[in-house]
Length: 135
Image 1 (tube, rainbow, N blue to C red):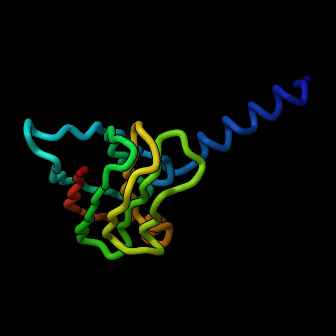
Image 2 (image 1 turned 180 degrees about the horizontal axis):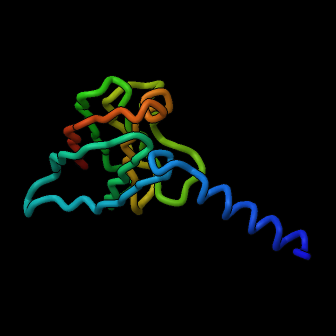
């Protein structure tokens, strides 16, 4: 007989394995590197279903982060967070596909590109161009 804790772990593992392939998370993380002497970079990518892409870049307190997303799917957005923070600095689904803001602290910031749940659920696809700059 399984103990309650072991039963909970077994049940959770069974639930994950039972998910259809399209519903599993296919996230990836990429570190943004600016070319020598440049303060911005243009990145190209794609999303499918529940995929997410996290672009990580280092910045200093007081610098201004500029982000612009140009997707082929109107349900593609991005959020901006300070790595490890509980709250987002910017939520694209409510604020649009362009952000410019002064950063509150030194450290790594994450720009997460994603499809809204309605599009992800339909297993939609999006190509995008993401421009990220720090000044």
